[in-house]
Image 1 (cartoon, rainbow, N blue to C red):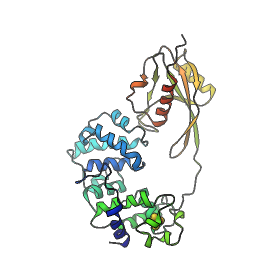
Image 2: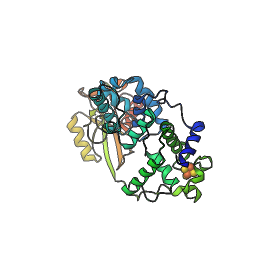
Image 3: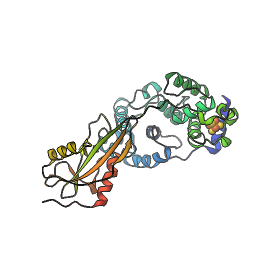
Image 4: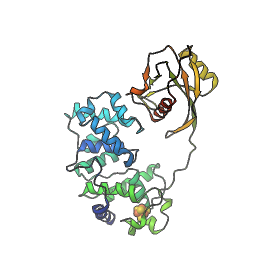
Amino acid sequence: MTTFTKDLLAWFQEHGRKNLPWQSSPPNIYHVWLSEIMLQQTQVAVVVDYFNNFVIKFPTLAELANAEEEKVLTSWAGLGYYSRARNLHKSAKIILSEYQGIFPTDYSELIGLPGVGKSTAGAILSLACNQSRPILDGNVKRVLSRYHRVTGHYSDSKVLKELWQLAKYHTPSKHNASYTQAIMDLGATTCAPRNPLCSKCPVSRNCKAYLCNDQASFPHKKTRSIRPEKSLAFLAYRNEKDEIYLLKRPNKGIWGGLWSFAECEDNDAAISAAIKKHNLKASIVSYLPKFKHNFTHYRLWIRPIIINSPGLAKDYHNINKLTLGVPAPVKKIISALDSLGCVESNE
Ligand code: SF4
């Protein structure tokens, strides 16, 4: 066992997180898997409530597998990266049909499930089955980059390979569940992205970045590329019954499978043409302030436009009884619409 691992395990006994809702004795692999998928791009503090609500709606893997995709996406709405929810649902169906509902604990089988990569498979098997498997999530990359002063950003395959080697090197052959939780906890609570708490860190005595006093330089930054920006008008059509028009988005692309407003290019000609095409009797009521939504590869500027659209009912939904999965920016606009009250008909 390396000194790093010994120091970390000793620290975990006293400081590790042991009361997260997906931690139980014995571990429930379904809960561990759900939490690991939710944690892929989201912090623990946000995941806790989503996890608790999710397991109330889908207490077992079979209930998740047999649920409508719409219900799964609705329960995920707000967490972002919706492909995670679709992959979770697909995986549950695969486990039910191909593994008789028994969660696979073989690494090669687990990694074959949609949405389960090397690090997620390692985390699930370590935490739920105490198998000796390395993990390399964002927290671990940061800890190891600092501890070993790894040069270069991990988007470079050589750097990533080096980090995986280091992750394997430190992974113990026993106490693996504790070690895995410990290294994740260290990254989340102590070796934070900004202002790491090195004076309280259990591995500081051998941390190269700490000893060189250049922790802030690690992990090395990726050479920045400027994120492109796009602009769209979101057309919030409301009929005289205070219902809003929502469309189901295609499964591929942003917010796949979720429900959203009609949209068009953000210019007067395109907006006017789209409104006419939708309903000749429609008229603009007001423009809400434009706001920005960040995707990994670009920024989207959204201009919400409230439109009075009398006489139509098809695909219009009551906003007070909405059970559809909608992405966060759409939810935000719906809340604003709600506070504005009902729009009167032009007729
Ligand atoms: S000593 Fe500081 S930089 Fe090094 S691992 Fe600990 S918290 Fe991170």
